[in-house]
Amino acid sequence: MSDNSLTPAGIPVPDAARTARLRDALRAAAFTADGCLDLLGATAYAALSRSETVPALRATRGGTPLETLVRLFLLQRPVPRARAAEALPLQDALADGWLVPVPPGETESGTPDAVRATVDVRPYAGAEGRDWWIVSDLGCSVGGAAGARAGARGADATGTAADADRAGLVLGVGGASTTLAGITVRTPVARALDLGTGSGVQALHAGDHAVQVTATDLNPRALAFTRLTLALSGAPEPDLRQGSLFEPVAGERFDLIVSNPPFVISPGERFVYRDGGMAGDDLCRTLVQRSAEHLTEGGYCQLLANWQHVEGEDWRERVTSWVPAGCDAWIVQREVQDPAEYAELWLRDAGDHLGDPQRYAARYDAWLTEFERRKVKGVGFGWITLRRTDAAVPVVVAEEWPHPVEQPLGPEIRRWFERQDFLRGHDDAALLAARFRLADGVVQEQVGLPGAEDPEHVVLRAGRGMRRATKVDTVGAGFAGVCDGSLTAGRILDAIADLLGEDPVVLRDRTPEAIRLLVEQGFLEPAD
Image (cartoon, rainbow, N blue to C red):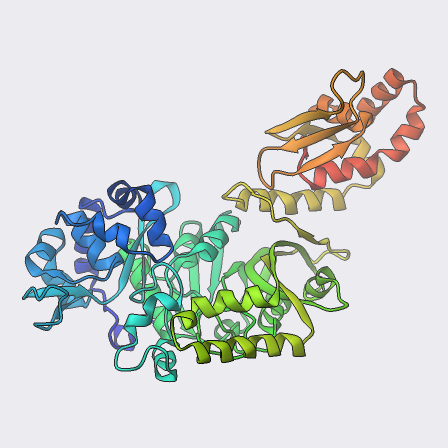
């Protein structure tokens, strides 16, 4: 889909040379993530991330090029043509459709000869300190559809006509997209697939370590915005394909699949960016189940997902049942909301709380009715990572971890799967013949009453990755403290047995399970 004639109406059509000049102007004005933070300050910048614009408006009253760009592209305010010309190549921006003239009398102050932006352009801190820009619909650089209510022209913003106008909205970068970018494994690959690309955030990242990037979306407007995002950021255009789920890549395999899909569990399909059009959590289940047939051996599929907590069913059993044969999987639940909280979250996302109270109540009731019908007692949110190994006995782990983690977490996720390969290939005898070292950032804590001769228990705490903590006994603490890669596990246990006066054979028999746990959780790493 590289033909610009396929770009939906109202979306800029980038010319390569003009786009390069625009990018240079944005950089020269410091319209970057760091530059905007310096200009707005922490308070206004944080408020902007909550779709609150008043602090940013107060901070951009001086008329500098950077202030003009913030008002144009982040705050969607018209600016005088002369100021726009000072900040960017005005004729280029008008020619490609980034800006359009404002009809006389439609500016906030009645200022004649003004221009306004047609899209949101949000500065984004790229890999290795580079400056990127994410392009999305007006009002959607932060927040959800609620931020674009004013964009529903020609209809009452509380009515169904406004919903139709906003159904195909394309959002910019948000918490979900940055989370997915942070957990993605970034090893060099030949082919990467960004399924449900939206504004192209994941495709932009993938271009840094994939020879070929394919980006798909059901929404043709999303593909147009992905083209804009990558063009403005100076990245090569990916292979853009329109279609649902894996249909555009039937029969193809990839080394990496990433997806921030429309995972919202809703009673109806209102917005393409969030509502998948399938019942319950079927869309996420389908993505997971079908991923293996599109992965190369050793390839990863990483996605964000919602799943139902159904009465009488363990959520872990529900989600792990989705995992296809031949794939290891690590599923992490980060948050759980009750049905009312969940409904309120997505009603606010749609801006329903700002409209007619009766319509809001009716939609709220529809969500709760659907959850009650399905016996849903909660909705979980988290990450699912699969790796195709074709192992006869795959490793599938589902766990709840609401605690802070280190970002980017991608390197730790890759190491987790590598550790599973190691443990699968080492029986107890091989484990005792292996050498280990204590992972970086692991410390030991002793917990007990003040003045006591011995601690009640010893805790190993990791400062990196998932930042886990685990209790260990005297043998475990001594074993971990000695692991520096020089001695085999068996020799270390023999020395501990001699020190404690225990039978070394008995200690060797009962310790491998504890070693496996320390390796799986990342406290110990194979020295080789």
